[in-house]
Image (cartoon, rainbow, N blue to C red; front, side, top):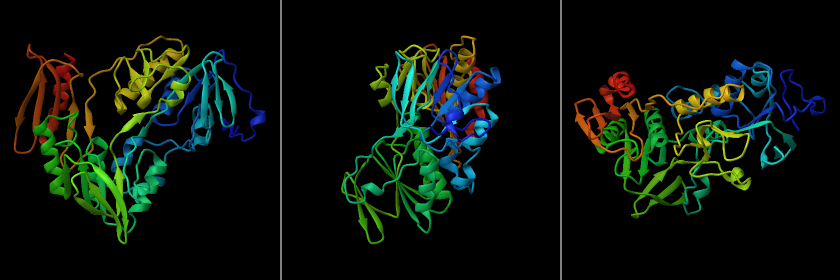
Length: 398
C-alpha cells in the first residue's frame, strides 16, 4: 500500500499499521477531510491518523475553482500543499491513489484496492459527484464537469484558443462559472430549467437582478429550458434544447448540480437519505463511523457550503479527541462569487412559515423572510445591498 508518512517513507513494509483501539481513519482529501485532520492536530498531536484518497492528495480550496479565470490562476497555481507536505505538517499518514471499495462496520476494517486497513474511528469525507447530464448525441461524452482540481485542469485546457462556452445549469456553480468566463472574454450561454437563476435560494426579484447583472457582462440566458443533445460539428459542438433551439459552442460545461457520494455506505448498510445521515455528533447509523462535508446530511440538513463544513470539522475533531461536542451552526450566509452583481443569501430553513418582504433599489435588492410575528428568518441581498449582511446576521442571532 503506498504510504506517505511524516518522514516521507515510500516503503509500506516499514510502516506499522495503528491499532483499531485509537486510530482515526479519514476517507477523502477534499476541504472537509483535510480541515478535519488539521483540527484534530490542533487538539491532539500524537493519535495515529490516516487519510486515504483516490486522487494524488494535493490540498486545495475547491471553492476557488469557479473564479480562477478572473484570478488568473491555472490548476497548478490553485494547488496548495502536496500529500507529502500535508503528511509531514500534520504528523499523519496519507495514502494517495487508494480507492476504498468496502467498509466492514462489524470488524471495523475498510477494504481498499491496495489492501485492508483497520480503524478505531472512521470518518467519511467522501464529497459529491456531478449529477449525470443525461444528454444524447455523439458529443455528449465531451461535456465537461468541474468538481476537483483535475477536472479544472481539463476544463482550462479545453478553453485554450476557444471562444464560445455553453453552461448547463444556472445554480450557484453555474452562475459563478458564467461570471468568470464572461469576465475573461468568453461568449457564454447559460441553459437553466428555472425561470431565474438560483431559484432555490433567491426570490424572483433578486434572481432576476442577478440575471440582469450577468447579462450586462455578456451572458446569454435560456430560461425554462434543458439541454437534450450535443452533436459534434466541424467547428465544435451544437447543443439542442428541449424546444428545438440550438446553440453553437466550443466547450460545453455541465453545472446542473452535485449528488452526495453514498454508494459505499449504502453497501455497508449505513443509513442514507439525500446524503449520509448523521446526528449532531456527526455519527452515522454505524458505531464509530462519522461523516462530514458535502456527503453528510446532518439531522435532515444537507448544507454543501464551506461554513457548515468548517463547523462540522471543529465539532467532530473535539469529539474524536475526547470532548463530546455536537455541531452547532451560527448564521451562515452563502456568498455567491458573481462580481457582476454580488449576492449574499441566508435562506430560511425549509418549511419555515412566513414570506418574503422585498425592496428593490436602483443598485440592489433587499429581501427579508419574516414569519407571522414579524421575526426575521432569513435574507437575500444583492448588489449594493450586500453591505447590510453583518447587521442582518446580528439580527438573526438575536
